[in-house]
Figure (cartoon, helix red, strand yellow):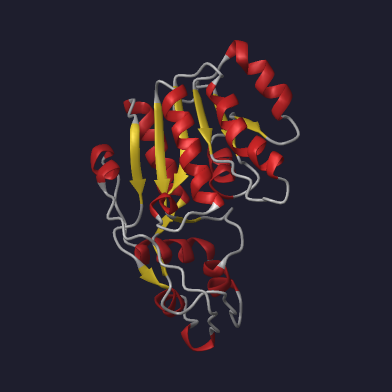
Length: 243
C-alpha cells in the first residue's frame, strides 16, 4: 500500500489484522477500547483504506455479538473511504448454517450495499506468526500433539503474507469485487503431521472438518501473485518459524 495512504485496520490483536498492523506501522488500529472515539473522529475526516479483519465469535451475549460484528461493519462503512477490504471466509460455502458463516454472509451484504469500492476476500485457513493456537500450530509446536480433528480432516492453507500481498496490489490497481483466496489444493491433517515430522506422535481427535474444495486462483492471476499449494505454504511457514 502507498506509504502516504491513511489506513484503518480492525482486529489487530491477533491473526491477519496483527500481521497487517506490523507491515503497515503507520496505520490506525481500531480496538474495543478506542472504537467509539476513533469511529466518531473519522466520520468527518475519513480514511483512504479500511481493512476489516475483526470478528468476535463469543455468542454468550447476543447483543454484544451483534454490535461487535454487524453494527461495527455498518459503522465502518459510514466512514468516508476510497477502498474497503472485508476479510470474509470460505466457510460461507458450507451447507451447515452456523452463527459464524451466517454473520459473515450478513456482513458481506452490508459491505456490498454500503461501500461503493469494496473488495471481499473469502479466505481459507491462514498461517502466520500472529495466528492463534490451533490444530496446525499444535502439530508444529507440541512435542506430542493432541488434536481435536480426525486424521482425514482437510485444510486449504494460505499465508498471512499472501493475503497482505493481494490486499496491497488490489488497492494499487483499484480492484473491487468478491474473490476466494485459497490454496491450489487441500491437505489432510495427517499430511500436515508428516510434513512437520510429527506423524508417529500425533494423537487425533473425533471431529472431522472438511474444507470446501475451492480452486481459487482468479485474483492471483489478475494481480500476478504466485498461487501456492497447501503444502508449499505450510513448508514456507515452518521454515520461517524455525529461523
